[in-house]
Length: 286
Image 1 (cartoon, rainbow, N blue to C red):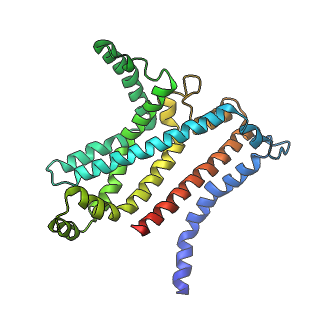
Image 2: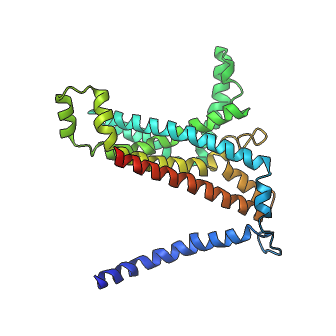
Image 3: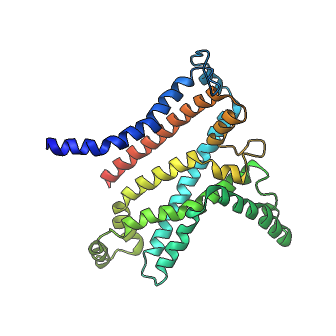
């Protein structure tokens, strides 16, 4: 056991060292700089909690938090419903199941910036042309206000990640024992009852994984936000990641941006860990 333990740590050491240098050390430095007047090169004064007090007084940052939270909640629900629906579809005995799996997964392979520009063309040019042709006013002027910009980001995110989440649900759906499904069918359960009473409890771990991934992705999204709306109009669709980036590299207030990043980290970690805890607890109850 001692030899196996030593070999284990020998193999783990390079990974742990790399993780420490890339993640933990920069995080500690960033946490320290958030209490200073760091300008990206040096920190001359220790400011204490001044940056943190200032960020909670900044309306733009608070609006970015609220917009990101709304986006995350809607996206998590929509992406998981789409992913589970697609997984149920492609796990049926269809000749085109493999083709559908490929087609549904392909949007996830497109880069976020390119995807944003593609959907920007659809929302601005295609929607506007269709609105003028059919006389539908709600299709005209998409991305010109906060409401349509919000739903544009939601649609883009659902289209991109629905197929990715589908893969996770497929893995669990295909692991459901067919004997249980056949037994429930013999007992007279209809398709909905078989799904709700048999399939759903068995794929509960997939919900934990998928919700964690969609939640973290929704909170950290930047490139699609940049390409689709750029935070406009008037920063009404600016998410937290973009607000932090603009504070650091447009306003050149590095210490203030670092304080925002620390608050962002705490927010995402708290929400993600809470979600995992309650989902794990629900798995046991099921």
